[in-house]
Length: 72
Image (cartoon, rainbow, N blue to C red):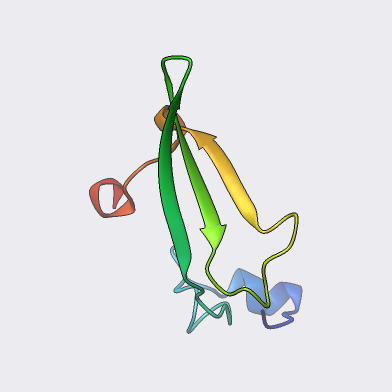
């Protein structure tokens, strides 16, 4: 991510592009869905083994996951 001053941050568009405006480098993630105890959970794990560590994953309830194409 690119370091920005407060003024640069304030000049960003309301919906900045993660790559062009914020300097993020998109990664590839594996998505796995589970159903434990009758509740749906979604697990996102980093595909890059070199970047993978104990904290490079996300676990969320199914209700917390939104398809961003539908929410735009």
